[in-house]
Length: 110
Length: 112
Image 1 (cartoon, rainbow over the protein chains, first blue to last red):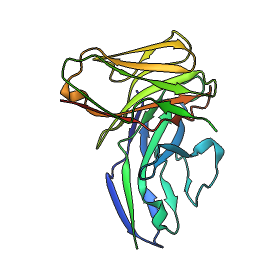
Image 2: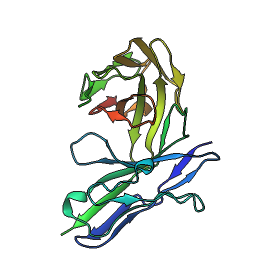
Image 3: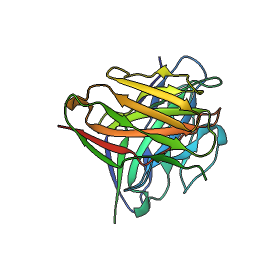
Image 4: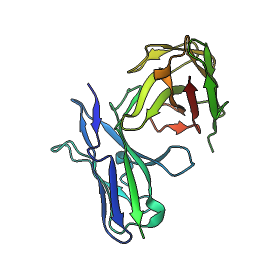
């Protein structure tokens, strides 16, 4: 079974401080991991995916298969990063669905 | 840019009513999905479809059904609405693999 756990419902940091949003998964095969973000009054949108190994808006995430984690990190938080963040997993090639975590609401304090 | 449009932003229905939530995408995507979004529970998959007239149950299909008569349209049906179906409903679409989903704005349904 596929499962995604985001242990923090709420996370609050000061502007300029580092940010780490945690994501752990359970899956027996080779997963594909994603981070989605929902800013206030906007639709949910893809932030990044592990296969791209890219940095979007200063965020990066590394897939750690040993620890089954895909934590989202940014070295210096900005106020516009305040949003709801969801980690998601699909079961790799041929997968038909995406399983989401419970979400973490990130608040950046000025 | 992909556009996923959900017909209603807010909907208020009474217990026992039959409710239709409509979703249309304009990019010829094969896959379409219905999720519900609840605080503390994240997004939970209700149903999905990978082709016209095809449908698959997600993790919480009970009390719901779907229809996909045309590739661009995916409808979610609540046969007899109940108060525990009060939620935000999100439609999404994707083109093949990997599953990078494009979401609609959501429909906030209140069942009284």
